[in-house]
Figure 1: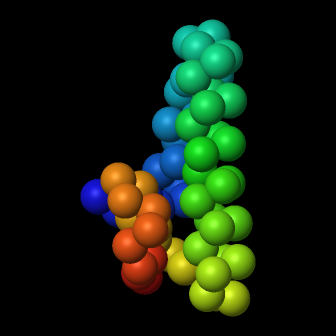
Figure 2 (figure 1 turned 90 degrees about the horizontal axis):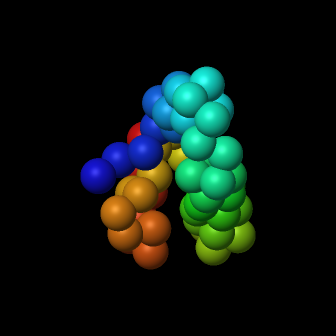
Length: 60
């Protein structure tokens, strides 16, 4: 399953609007960690990331 930054932002904003603060923080932190981990291991920033299995190669 692919994660795309604009959709992550939409999901995070929606969670904020409905006051799901703990879930908002969890989703945001997981997204940033996935991006950081892939960048650390590849030296690249991708358009999409595998959010079900972050260890798989990102694409995009």
